Structures are given as structure tokens and as C-alpha cells.
Length: 606
Image (cartoon, rainbow, N blue to C red; front, side, top):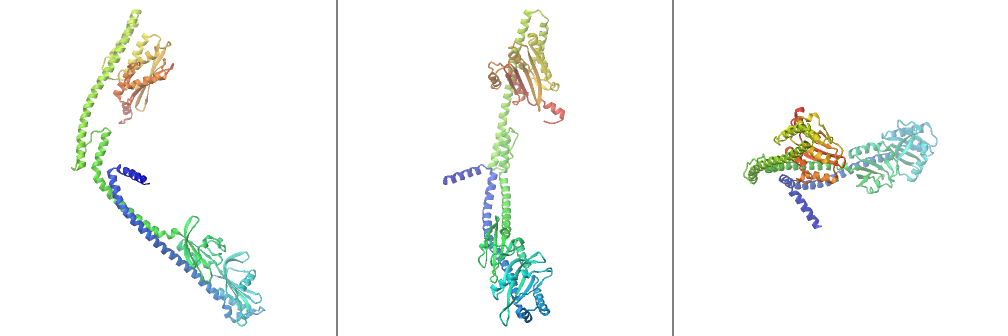
């Protein structure tokens, strides 16, 4: 373990050490500034987070308590309303009266109308007398109500409760035919003050819109979802109508809400929530608010974002200062390094401007002296190499001319001995043209047309020497003719094709010269349909063109290759491709030969 840590530290140090001086200064400066700022910001955020979460939870709990308290006070008022019949002697008398006359109906209906208007949310009020007759009053909008469907349940619940009021959670009632409304109900049995016998039942239905007015402001503030459940775990109110009356007694949402009040954290569908609940001691109902933790943490996020922005501003300021200082300190050194890279790429026309006499300034002075010395040495090498190349080109040309002249004179001698023919005159004329073309300076530049004319003369001479042995075709495009080229680049290749390709076969052969361009490069191909060569011989030949050995392939092709590379650069080259019995193709690539033509034609500076 220790060795791994040591190795990691060493690798980190190596990476740091390989950085530029400017980057090192920036990293050190920013590190020394950002480390304490980051620690202080994190500690402050943690302390503020705990305080804000506690305060927000307490605030949400207080709002839940207030909502539950409003519900309790409302229900307490309804319970008090249920004992009002005992304070009305006429109502108490009529409830114990069997006959239902106009006086009884008018008195009870007046009392029910009074109760129904006590609170706006009351949907209906019912009175049942001792003989099972039910009287009721409903709010506007409810034209028909059906108390007979519920009377049996009322009797059972009030009998079980005795004289205590009964609170029923949210449930639907039928009104106006098939319409349903969600209400919660307060009911109580009515006992005669004088006889203490049950003389009826009072029932009050309250529309659950009451809870909407109490709970929705809480949801708006907390951005959460609030439930009211009764003592049995059934939903009394929720903003989703489909949840009304649903049994949540076995749900995880209620398991932790066991005390009179409190809060706990939970996940709902993968999202974090905090649940704040409050229980009513009088009704047993619970108000539970599920608040998204992101809402409670919003102030903390604002505080965190403010700390992050502040820290980043300080770090950016420190970074700007570090960059400025490091740039000012390392600028001379960076400039010197940049000039060194230019020297590495071959540019020696550089000079370090020395302003100060510090270590970097002394380094620049030594660098300037070194460049001056290198330029002097390179000039000496250039002059020496130039003289050497000129001597090499002359030597190579002198190697080509004697060989050709010897073969030509030998042909003239043989024809003169064998035939007293006019062809000798033609042969001598062609030889004169060839000699006149060859004896001029070898580094002279001619046109492609002149070079091809020289090759044509040479091939015509060979046709006289070898009747019916060879034919030739020159298929070079006309726009190549005016291009400049060094002398004697095609003739040695043609000579090699005749004596190594065509002479060794019995049937006549053909030499074809064509050309094309690839960009600004000119490609010339001299192809014969002679005997060709195998892969091993071909590989040796191509190798001999670059290794400097003359060996069995002679000097013709290698000399042309060397002269082309010396004059046009190493990108120019000569290559050979051949197949046994299929002939040989020599490809000569001269880079930039069409550059002048391209400049003249398109007016471009290349």
C-alpha cells in the first residue's frame, strides 16, 4: 500500500515537473489560494445547511399544526351545533310528537334552516324524530337528498356512541338523482332533558371544500402534498379526488407518523421527501404533509451557490493574477524557447532581444552567439556541398557520354564494313545531332520538347542499327513540351529499355513514352514490352537506385535518379515496375515541375 502511494506521488511529481514554468507558477498560486477558500466555504455550507434544514422543518411543522388546529376548531363548532336541539323547547317537543302537523314541520324546518346557514360549508342538516320521521334542509344546488338510505347507519353509529357525537370521515352521498358529493359527517343522538330518553338524531354533512380552503394554502407554500386521514387510516382529504376514502392504514406513508407530531424522511418514487405530521387529540385525525426535500433545501442551495460563486470569483481573480505574474516572469524564457524551435525547424534568422542582465538575459546572449556561429558553419558546409554536387553531376555526365559514343561508333564501323549504303550518312547525321546535344554543359536546362527530340533522334539511330527490331511512340501531352527540365534524363532510361528489355527477345518491341501530372508534380513513364524481370531482380534494381552501388544493373538508371534528386530535391524519384514476359515500366516523378505553368495560368503565388 505504501509503495503504491509512493509510486503515485512520484508519477504526479514527474507530470508536474514536466510542465512549463508558467504552468507551474499558475498551479502553485491557484492551489495556495483555492485550498483555504474551499475548506472555509465547505465548513460554512455544512453549518448553514443544518441550521436552515432545522428551521424549515420547524416552520413546516408549525404550518401543519395550524392547519390541524383549524380543522379541530371547525369540528368542535359542529359538535356544539349538535346539542342546539336541546336548547330549543319547541324542537324537543316536536321530536317526541308522533303526528306531523304544520306546526311541527314549520318549527323543525326553521331550526334546520338556521343550522344550515351557520357555516357556508354545511351541505345538509337532518333531524330524525323518535318515530323515524326525517326532516332535512340542503344548501342551494341540492334539490333532492336521500336520508332514508343512510338512516339505518345513523341509528347504529349513534346507538354505539351513546350521547357522544360521532365523526365520520369523508364519504360520498347521493344527491339530485345519481350525482354524488364528498362530505364528512357529525351526528349525535338527542335525549330529552326531562326523560333522558332518545327522541331523535341530528346529522350535519359538511362539504370537503372546507379542507381545500385550509390545506391548499399549505401546499402552495411548501410545494408539497398534504393528506388528512382519520383515526382508521382512511383518507379524509387529498387534492387528488381519486384518493378520497382510500385506506392507507397499511401504507409506509403512515407507519412512521406514530407520535402526536414530528417529521421523518422517506423516498417516494425514487425522490427524497420530508414528511411533517400533526395529530389531533380530539378527533384522532392526522394532517401529513409530504414536502420535496429539494424545496426545503432551496435556501441552502442559494447559500451554497453564493458560496461557490464567491469562491470561483476569488479563484478566477487569483488565476488572472497568477497568469499575469507568471507570464511577466517567463515571457523572456518563452520567447527564447520559441526561437529555439524555429532554429530546430531550420530558421536561423532569429535573434533574442536581451533587456535585462539576469539569468534569462545571459541565456539569450549566449543563444545569439551560438546562432551566429552555427550560421557561419552552415555557410561553409553549403559552399563545400555545392562544389561537391557540381563535381558529382559532371562526373556522372562524363560516365554516360563515353558509353553511348562507344556503342554508336561501333555500329557505324560495323555498317561501313558490311554495307556500302546511304544509311551510313543518315546514321552519321543522327550521331552528329546526338553529340552536339550531349557535349554542351550537363547542368543546362532545356525544354521537355528538346529532350524528347533528342530521344527521338536516338531511337531513329537505333532503328537503323537494328532494322525491324523496335518501334517507339511518344505520347506526351502538348502542354508538357515547354516545361523546363535538365538534360539527358530520358535517353539513359530508353537505352536501358532497349538493351535490357528488347534486345533479349526475338520478336520486335515497342517503347512508349507518356506523361501526366499529379497536382504540380510531373510524372513521366517509359514503358517497353520486352522480356521484363522477376520479382527478386526487380527488388534488387530498385534497391540499387538508392544505395549507391553500381553492380550488374549498370550506372544509367542510378545516374538519372541521382541527378534528378540533386536538382529537384529528395521528393523527386525514379522507380521501376516489371513482370516477366510483360515488359518494364520506369516512372520518373519530378516534383513542382508544373509550378511555373500553374502560376502563369491562374495568377497564384505558390
